[in-house]
Length: 67
Image (spheres, rainbow, N blue to C red):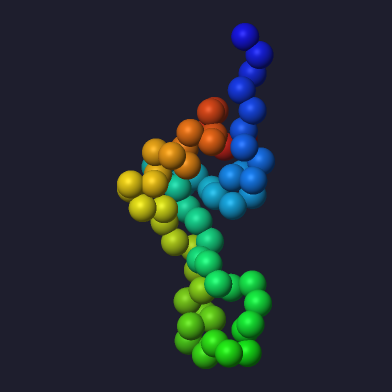
């Protein structure tokens, strides 16, 4: 059997923590920054966690975990 491939788009967007949870960047932090207040922009810099309902689907894109 050949090796399974990691989904490269998912590799760039998600990271897996040491405990196996999936971390994702906050959405809405790429453009139109002038319309958003400073407090909102600070919060958008931080990463969030993927919900438990979606975690299983995201982990399917990483057959061997993260390299």
